Picture 1 (cartoon, helix red, strand yellow):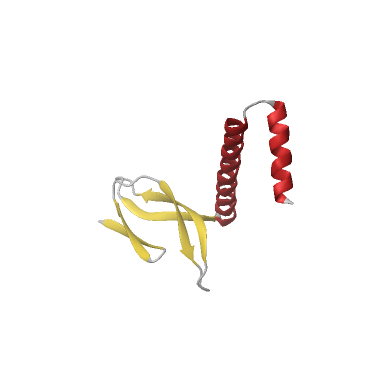
Picture 2 (tube, rainbow, N blue to C red):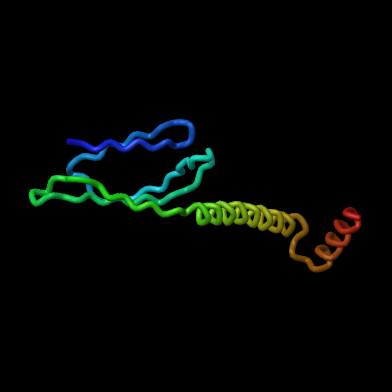
Length: 115
């Protein structure tokens, strides 16, 4: 006996076959609401077994984690922007060097160009 779980993952369905030897597990998936929008959920699956160890049914607990996923995405984008700024600063030091006079002159030059 097997249990089949079908999840719509974006535009393509994802089919998961759960067998009798299945253990508890969890997955993150975007689920579609009735209105057509998607939200991220953490789904935790726990099998209920009979006395002989056969899986009788599955219990699933879903937690809405959309806000967390959006925060992670924002953090990821901010980290990329920060890395780019650090790379620019490193290139500035490579070009101008560590001389305070050259750095002051270069900064003044860049500021006048920006105006």
